[in-house]
Amino acid sequence: MKLLRDFLDSQEKHFVKGGRFEKLYPFYEANDTLLFTPGDVTKGKTHVRDSLDLKRLMITVVIALLPALLMAFYNTGYQANHAIMNNQATPLDTWQTQVYMMIFGNDFSDNVLQSVFHGALYFLPIFIMTFVIGGHVEVASAIIRGHEINEGFLVSGFLFPLTLPPTIPLWQVALGITFGVILAKEVFGGTGMNILNVALTGRAFLFFAYPAQISGDSVWIAANMTDGATGATWLSQAAAGGSEALQGVSWFDAFLGFVPGSMGETSAAAALIGALILTLTGIGSWRTMLGVALGTAGTVLLFNFVGSDTNAFFNVPFYWHFVLGGWAFGMAFMATDPVTSAFTEQGKWIYGAGIGIMVALVRVVNPAYPEGMMLAILFMNMFAPFIDHFFVQANIKRRQVGYGRIAASEA
Image (cartoon, rainbow, N blue to C red; front, top):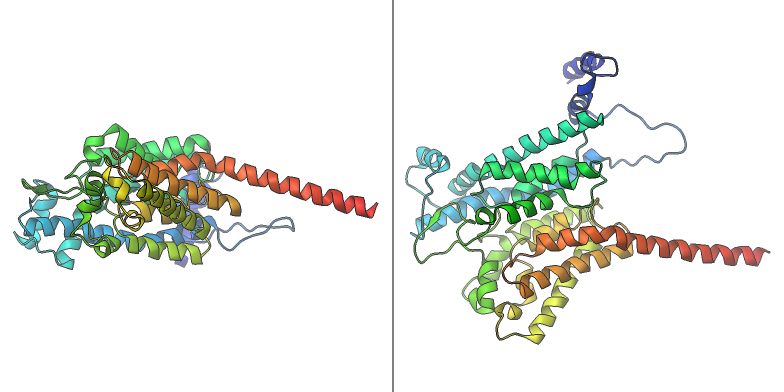
């Protein structure tokens, strides 16, 4: 490591102000701080330095995402292999199938090894494309502005591919992450200044721009469904048939994530492990998470009570909403984004509850789009600054009244 440290130090003079590659300093600095702790030290008595810097924060979130990442590898391949093995689907005519068959032949068993391998063939290209394109956009933005490259994109680069179906074209992945980084973050000033979640903004762009590739009954399984079989998510089936459509399926399977869906969003169990890590480290707010759960449960219970003869989704119990679609993933990783969520303690309750209410409204009242979590979080992202402003101003007024009383008593 000392050899690498000495090499970077010897090259620094070419990138600092006045050097030949002055404009590329953000690129040098990003690699230097990625490999080593930044050498800058806060001096003076007017600053408070926390041991949890941006790099450590982002790495902690990535660690919390690992269970969902592992499920993306396994469940993507498991859903395809299980459907093919049971004659519900046929292999896709893709290079992934050719590579898989070079290793395992025509054996599409749904054991762990073959499922993980098959899933990796679909997930890794999307993951790599996200980082290659999104990373270059981040670097280009930093060079143009003359700012340092920070670690803000690290988490967005993990979150974005986990929200996508396995068969999405790679060029759409490139468009989506580019849109998210530029329109949701860079135009606002970069990491820490954005009001919308980057990964969700890119996902929303793809949903509305290319709905055929990111919605439908068969897109969620990396295989060609045969006649009479469906690759639709259980959430879509519940939206169409209500609780009766979920008869014969296991809530526990949905909780563990062995269901069709976006590659990293299916497992509520994996999301809860991540939520626990974020809560214990203080990065994710339990108030926001609990607010989402209470808002969803309360609204769904109201719908259950009202009932409907024309909309079967009204009778789906709240505990099914917790394990269907991207609810748990969004609650744990998207709603708790420290930049785009509310930061006041009271505001976190309202912000989280607002997401829970909105996701239930979108899912139940608008069954044409049964997911809802993505739109609910983006909607509340826009209201988070207003919520915080209300509580901050209320706190200022309360303190002013207190100071006035103290001054009056001393007089």
